[in-house]
Image (cartoon, rainbow, N blue to C red; front, side, top):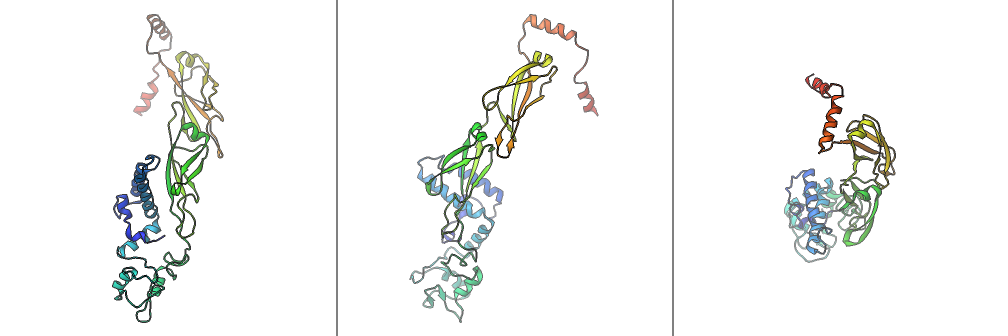
Length: 332
């Protein structure tokens, strides 16, 4: 998608990176700038929106290996190069670049089809051999070779969802290329940090080709109770010492709101996981489980009577050290 802009714009300078920047550092820098200048973070700020578009354009070119190589080659020709319309009288153009390279110059020998005769050959032949055998202005062949019309740039956006919305799925309204609103359907079960690609929802092609894609970066807010473990949901469930020691039936919350009853077996230790089938995250690829992690709650304050009763209880327990096996294995 080479264009006149490539001669005039320093995409490395736009992103504030060096010309030998790595792909990882380039992506890191872009994401930081995109978050800073995204229209959602700067509502009504025309300057920020313009800066965001400038950043997106630069990253779209430099993040594509082929486009970056082509851009570097074009920029190496010299910033004085210009596309010159046939029949225009303006000075400058590819004549300036190739004229200095091969001893020719702009002048009367130039014809309407960007042809400059020199010893029986013309610049059409030279550029055709370099860039695919076509002429400038054509959508096939031309500057990019035989690839046909150029593809539009990708548009990157970000959104933050509540935990429940991410597990159930949601439809959002976002600003697309040119500020046009578009509907985006977030699938059920999307996870924090996931990227969603929407084909053809990015910037339009400059010459009638396929539009770019919209790449949506999704962040998910933490839930005060539940935690994702793949498609499973984890929840820490406190039980009393008596419930853990003697066994009990307890209620455990679910993401849908209605609690379920679980049986805690006598002698259940802290950290044991009780599984509830099919009460996790539901997606087209499957459904997870609810994992209830038992946490034995120890009272922080005891009355004198309760303390005496506990001491009497302890005196009746077997004389054993629960850490003995741990210490033995550590020594081994």
